[in-house]
Length: 265
Image: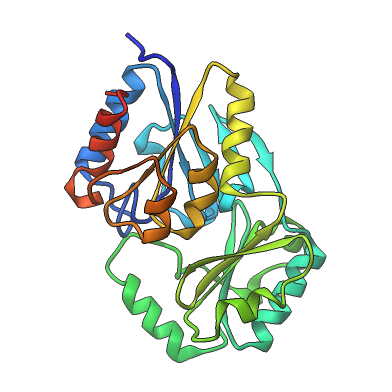
């Protein structure tokens, strides 16, 4: 029998649902058990759809991609919020002037601009041997002009320039979200992990409660907005402070323990 109330669960990917694109068996077990009890499970990730491995094997009910800029529920696209061609080009100019390596992410396609070969080799080595496709996408010089209006996110990586300095250079109506030292993502200010969650709630109806599970600063909008919020044991201090409850680490049945604690399974 379904649990009461029915819950829409929003899972961050990196550090929450998976590590290096590998989902722990306990997390898969928790997802399937919760769905069997009538709950809906969705991703809510900063990654664009073009920069994740095939997630169909998970059998999820929906996907929130690109920090809320693209939301799919039960096979239907309910949010599509590109940055806009002019703003995307302005962000790219800033990143180029600062010498960043960065990805340009649409829903179906992604491209990478390499301005620093040494940093690029380091980050490619970090991802080597994993199924993670994020640093092995098409080169930016192959991106067609008509792709600019479809860009959902730009993501820079591998720099020692202060995040606040970069944030001050962003165009209006753009949010730059800190991820980690040298890593940040630029998205439309009209989209976030919280707006993605609320769009799903609006489709499902008021009888559904929301639960967010994350581990880092880019999860804070959904952790603050959810009815129930969970930080992973491996999460940072900001995520833990924002959460209703802190579970164990991803490798120590973190997702299973969270679902069990809140009665989903």
